[in-house]
Image 1: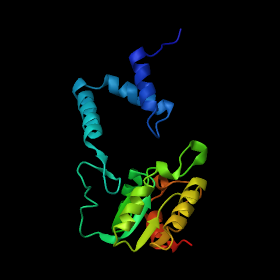
Image 2: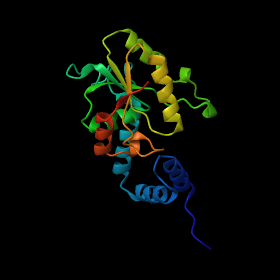
Image 3: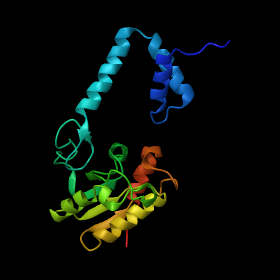
Image 4: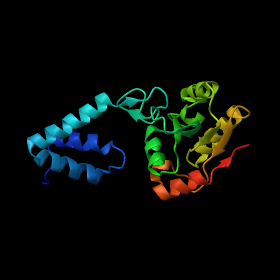
Length: 200
């Protein structure tokens, strides 16, 4: 008869397995490590998780992760307020900014247009993007979405919607086809931003 994991450990493995990038074996290893760790370490981890979840929110202006309103990126007067980089998720803001190739402002859409998954333009933060453009001062919107079908469709929609109101460009296709920004290294992102082109 083979040994089975106690039910609380099975539940912990299942919970950890729902995290992105954690497969079944990794989830089991992490769960077994945690249940054998000192109680203080586990409590510290639990407290850090709860604190981060309770204190981190989305910036009302750009949609990036923040602890304050507005976020530090929106509140930084040294950033170029004439250029806006549009990304899919709050994590993409971190990835693009780490490249060091962009010093403007950001706007997080909160997803991509995907009719098959029930995501329409009104489900994204496109209305907020239009409001930011109407406030004036913006000269260029850089669309920095992945190069898969949904990313291309969303980029084309934005280019058509914003045409005539502001220059719309898209980052160069230095990213692998069919992937998102989270898989790109800093150098690839830097080249993609530098090689962007206007969308027509």
